[in-house]
Image (tube, rainbow over all chains, first blue to last red; front, side, top):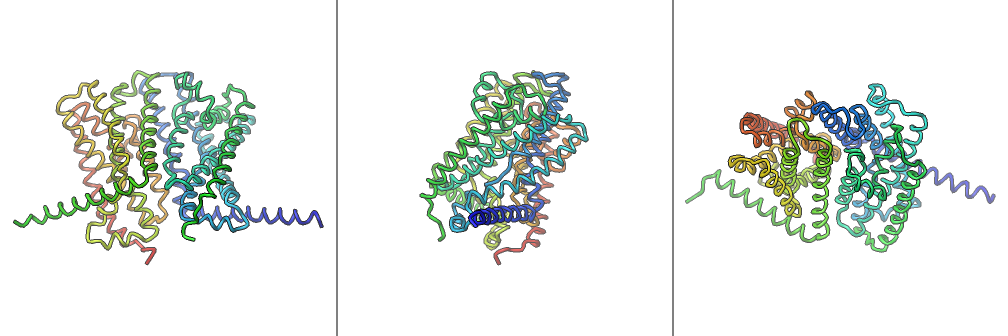
Length: 276
Length: 269
C-alpha cells in the first residue's frame, strides 16, 4: 500500500508530461508553414550565406588554406554548425514574457503542474522535433558528401554535447523570459544574446580566425562551447579535453539554473497578476 | 488661396506622420530601460557585423574585387540603411502580423487614410535614432579613405534613402502574404533572414543565388547596386534597374493589398 501511492503519483506526473508533449506537438504543427519558417528558415538561410561566402572566398582569391582550413573543411565546418544549431538552438520561452506581462501565469500557479515543468516538457517535445529535423538534414548532407561520416564516438559525443548545449539555451531563454517580471519587453535581451553568442561561438567564423587574445578570454566564457566545440567533436578534430568541455557546459548550465531559480522566486514576489 | 488637392494631401499625411512620431517618442520615453537596451542591442549588432569583416580581413587581402576599405564602406552603407529601417519601419511588420491575426486591422481600415501608410509607417523606435552616428561615421571615414568624389558624396544620402525604399518595399510585398498565412511570426523571421542575405555584396553569391536575390526577391540590390555606383559612376545602369524593381514592387503591393483585403477574415468581428 505504501509503495502504491508514490507509483500513482509517478503515473500522474508522467501523464502530465506526456499530455504537455502532445499539446506542444499539435501547437507546433497547427501552423506548419510558420513552424518551418521559424525553425528551419533562419538556420538554412544562415547556412546558405556562410556557404556562399566561404565558397567565394576560396574561389575568388584562389587561396587553398586559411588558418588550417581548406575549402572542403571550411564548408564541412559550416554544415556542422547548421546541424548543431538545429539540434541545440530552440526558441522555447519566446512567449514567456507575454504570459507574465498579461498575467497568464496565474493559471500555472493554481494548476497541479508548475510553470517550469510545463515549459520544460514543451522544450523536450520541441527537442524531439528538432532531433528529427536534424536527422533528416544530416542524412541529406551525408548523401551529398558535404560532410564526412563522423566516427561512432564522434557522433555519440557530438549529439550528447549538443543536447547539453540545448539545455543551456533553454535555461538562458527561460531566464530572459522571466525577466519580464521587471521588464516591459524581453525580446531585446534575447536578440542581444543570440547576436553575441553567434559571433563568439564561432558560428560564422571558426575561432582559429579570431585574434589569440580574444580566444584566451573566450575560454572562460560559455560561448565556444555553444557551437565551436560540438562542431569540432562531430568533425573529429577537437583537440581539447572532453571531460573539461562537458564540465564547462554543465557548470554553465547549473549556474544558469541557479540564477533561474533565484530570479523566479524573486519575480513571483513582484508578480501582480495583471487582469485578475 | 486654396492649396492644390495633391499638395493638401501631402500636408495631411505629413501632419499625420508628425503625430505618429510624437506618440512614439512619448511612449519610448516612458520606458527608459527599454530605450537604453535598444541602443545597446543595435551597437552589439553593429560591432558583431564589423568584427566579422575585420577578422576575415586579418587573413585575407581581398574578397573578390574589394579590399578591406571597400568592404567596410559597404557594411557602413548597409548599417545606415538598416538603422533607418530599424528606427522608422521595422516595428510595423510585427504589429501588422499581430493585427491581422487578432482582427485589429479593422480599426486601421476604418480610418479615412491610406491603409498601407498607417500599417507600415505608424510605429517607430526613436531610441535607435542616436545610433545613426555609427554608420554615418563609418561611411565618412571609409569614404574619405576611398577618396570619393564630390558627386559621390552628394549621392550618398539619396542612395541610402533609395536603398531603404527598396528594402521596405520588398518586405511589404512579402508581408502581404500575412493575409493568407495568418500566424506570421515565421514570415517576420524570414524577412529578417533576407536582411542578412543583403548584408553581403552580390559577388559572394553563386550565379543562381545572385540572380534569385537580385531579381525575384531583390534584396541584393539594396546594398550592392548603390555601393557599386558610389565606387564607380559608370555603374549607373544598376540604379536604373533598382528604380525599375522599386516600381514593380509598388505595383505588386497595390495589387496584393487589394487581394489581401478580400481574403482578410477580420478575426474579432
